[in-house]
Image 1: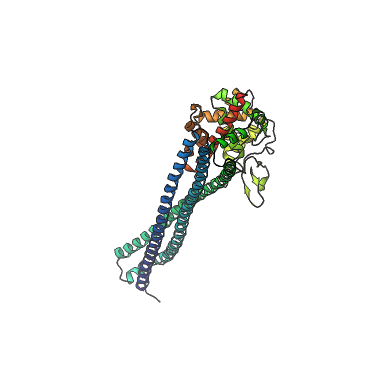
Image 2: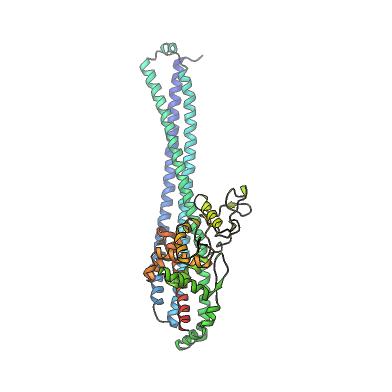
Length: 459
């Protein structure tokens, strides 16, 4: 039978061994994590440098584009505009790729941290379990065993207190690790959402690039016909401009409702303009952009099917995804639609992108929680109560009101472009480089519609 003294000595040795093991693995984990972090920081700095360079080049193309658009129509000017648009789109896509790589690098870092923390947590829990078992042995010593082992009381209880202190420190340590791991995991999920947003924006930019390539093909054809001569080009421009009759019959595509003749769309835009002071062409540009921007506009339905959705989402086969944010928009949407006497599960809304929610309604693409903030003002200006987001008249007025609130009433190019960006991305994100394409597209459409308006006014 072992003596108390032998047991106690072994216990001290075990305690020392446990502390050493924990320290050793902590040092190794820290060194590995530090090396990984250093590599990631270098790569991130490299990506950041490349991104800054690309953004500077994009800015140059934007300046060229704005300067050329102010010039009189000419062969050289129009070719320069097309080239600037194409280069800007291509640089934006490259910048988006770098941004996604940077986010991926950051996500990888967070994943490594989570793995290391999980490993460390496991080791410390094992050490704590061993210490708890040994504590029971320590607690099992009787007063007689301490006396017989020639161990004085103060030394015995001092060692026991130290033992318990280490056990408490380990407990506190893995509680902190759990908190850090949870925080890191939350940060990783946030980065994943941002990467999804970046990827969706890149897809939109690819659509934009295809449109520009189509413009480039058209310009190439004109150049071939004109053989580079300005006089011939001016004649071609004059011949291809639409006359008033053609413009009046051109269909204006709307989201969530039927297309209408351009003349009717202009009439609605003029009504909205007179009531808000926002330029008609800008209202048309925003409505057109909202209707044609993505493939997920006005194609989804709310559902009340219990676990194929439990509430208010869409069933996409294997994956269920909520169309609109339940806590923010669903109840408001149901209220808006019910007031109109419509079937809430039969009205199309925008589909959710990978990084968030959809649910935008009608030609102006208002989400329910935004629409309800404008309802009284829309009703007052349109004469419809309650206003209907799928009604073109109400939608045009809603769009103009939001643009006015966003600063479009100033009427300058800069103010209108910023108002359009705020319409799309909100005030907080309006100046982010990622969303610049939206403002550029809206202003290009507004310029196109202004030219058509001018032709109609001349006839």
